[in-house]
Length: 148
Image (cartoon, one colour):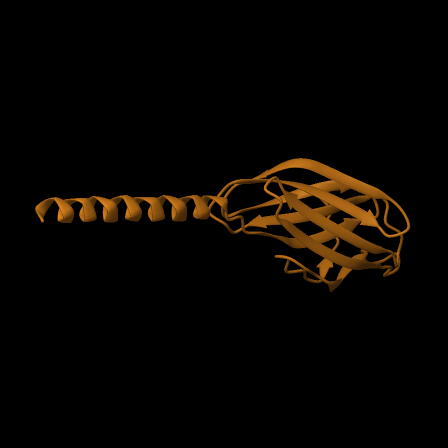
């Protein structure tokens, strides 16, 4: 009887260790990031995409920009530390009224999307990108042009 109790205790310990190990691996694999902000400068034809990593793990993301019916641009291998935000500049020409689709893709296959329209606002004020829809983890906002 003593031996059977010993084997049950050992089995319970092994099972508990296994479950803890699987849960730790799941925590490591979870990526949490979003396209936080987007701005375009027509003076230097640069789209700025801010990526926020609100997860516990550092990530690498590739950013793709597609102007529907027009140009395509990308910036690869952007390192984003945990709890950090980075600005990713992409050289691209976006005409007023164009629809712009942005995708941020992690190396583990997670994605954040941002779709917007560029509004022409005249000579005196900068162009704006206004979100029309979003999917994935993104949280788009009205974004005035920010020149650096």
